[in-house]
View 1: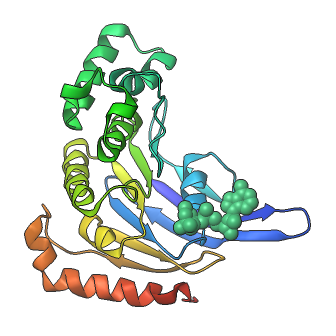
View 2: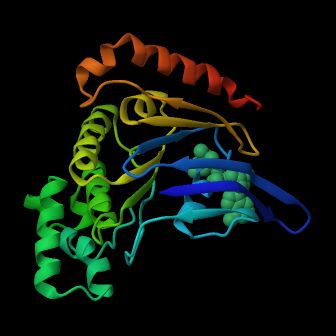
Amino acid sequence: MISIDGISKEFDLGSETVTALDTLSHDVAAGRFVAVVGPSGCGKSTLLRLIAGLEKPSSGSIEIEAGRVRRPVGFVFQDAVLLPWKTVEANVRFPLDTGGTKRALADAKVRELLELTGLSGFAKALPRQLSGGMKQRAAIARALAEDPPILLMDEPFSAVDLLTRETLNDELLRIWERTGKTVVLVTHSVEEAAYLADEVMVLSAHPGRLVKTYEVALARPRNEATKLDRDYHELVAALRRDLRGGRIRP
Ligand SMILES: Nc1ncnc2c1ncn2[C@@H]1O[C@H](COP(=O)(O)OP(=O)(O)OP(=O)(O)O)[C@@H](O)[C@H]1O
Ligand SMILES: [Mg+2]
């Protein structure tokens, strides 16, 4: 579904050039849940922006096979970027209206998404009336509005407390299982990566290279029992070793 072939990304800062990503290749199969971890500044957000087509690689290519859809990719940013003057409902509806979806269809879609993300009771609330976790749920609902087959998430839960984060993780898994989306999620939390993903990509410190990928064989559905599983703890420990100090080199 996503073929990343030898991409590099350099940023020209006038006097010098910063290499954010260095010849990274990877294929993500349809329906998979992929987590990306790596030290700060290694190019994780850049990778998502390249996949989303928000930036072009300096070399290499990214192919997205999504069939004939209007929007192949939905994006959830670290800080929920909701329109502050619009209600939750109107925020989720926004891409549908600008995309020209028929009114009745949009109504039904918004209702379905608010239900999927547990926000049905908050349709008329304004973003400032929501908790951080609820804002992120609304951002997820909005990213799913046009039914993109691919969902890209850049540290979506890093601004919420740990308990909320665990709840949101479970909700995200439920949404993923129900919708069959292909998910690429960037996270700083090795626990979150191990708990959620089918595979974890580990990037090296700046410039980001793909050092390793782990297949995560933990049974699904994942739940509290997963966090007691020895394989889960071994994976978390291995990821932490890889990232310790952010000094790993390929
Ligand atoms: N628009 C830009 N212009 C210039 N340099 C940039 C730009 N975007 C990113 N960079 C540089 O590219 C490198 C990778 O940045 P990126 O934001 O992708 O890292 P990251 O892995 O997401 O970091 P973090 O974990 O802190 O979010 C950094 O050195 C950054 O300074
Ligand atoms: Mg980032």
